[in-house]
Image (cartoon, rainbow, N blue to C red; front, side):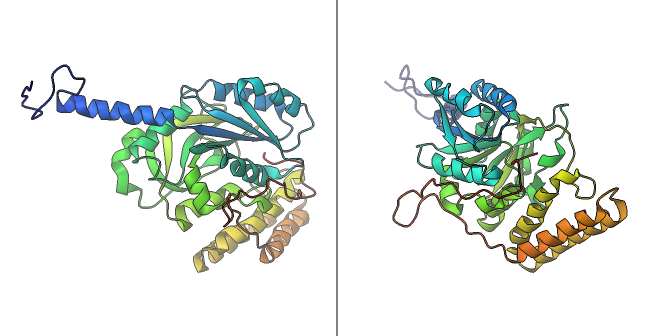
Length: 359
């Protein structure tokens, strides 16, 4: 039996098929939302000797409105992290000990490589001091749906706040100049970016297979900038800030990095930052080469003019990092080699002289 309706030509009464156009649109929307919820997301958390923070991170992840699997990548902590996380195995929490302190870069390389053989659709990566709001993942998946689905973006980045509810200075995304191409998405808190940090980043596994893994030799600082720029700029995959997805980054202080003012004990990290950025920026050609030298020349003169102590040591850190950058040629690993087999999860040698992987 057929019935007619001014808004839809033909529909079947009592068959469960939407009777009007608005009902059809609502049905399609609900179907897409259900598909998003059915995706298998693996949260990858890298930790090192910060069990008190990791416990809160795990608690926040397990309280998500959209459930996700959980993998803890431990950079061989000595504070009881291993025993604690192994005790959660019956609750589905997976644990990997890298066997050495590989830094944040090595930890994410290790964890994302493992994720690619765990039959998941996307990885949600973060440090152990990242505390997602209960609907953080749900809002990321809503943003995924709005931008067109899993095959239409490179990565999605959450809005990162400090413990006082304001912007976390270390985690600013970089908005592209042509963001107005999708200005209609701004009402959803979505804006196109080409750079972000590893504090709540959703990346489809298909993208990881295409662009490779984070460069483990970076060890610390700059690995996330290189990786997100590789996705958004070198691979040309549009990526977005999903502003309605919010997380807290529980840093001790809400300050950016400044070699002229930071604690003297952190100078080895700045040496690595200078070295790593040489590789990151100089791959962009002349523009990147000039930008790199402008950035660190400005830092050099800031030390000369404003550093209150250890001026020569700070200047030497910058110069040493620049020299090391000239000889720094890491290779990009991929989760599968040409034979189709997954690369070994054998950890690389740790970088000496660095005691931690994040601030």
